[in-house]
Length: 167
Image: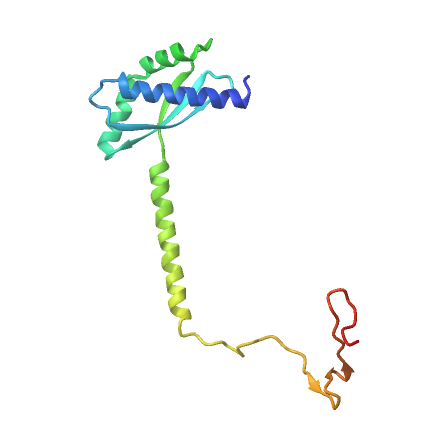
């Protein structure tokens, strides 16, 4: 078993090695515009899952998947040569769902913005159901001595420290 830090370092290293090899060494015409987005390595460093995205339509995605699958052995050899691990990890390629998830998030944000705009349009000419200020305020009556009285008791003003300000 290896530590999480070593797993992350090895995943980052494998990501760089595979990306460079795909760019420079694989000459397969089926390979489209591919980007290696992530690599996840098992705790024993024997399996690596490589995630990729392909720019283009479904046909280019399928042909790129076939090209990567046929080049898996050469890529594994390159990873083993450049990492120096005792056991070279086996590689498995998975299409990354980031673009689809990004589209879904964009659609959800657009729907939320439309709902907010609808609520704003409804609120433009709206009136309060009751009074404009729904909170009750204590009745303040003026006494003969110009002292504010609440409920028959004189109101004493105090400062922040609680000292009487009347003196």
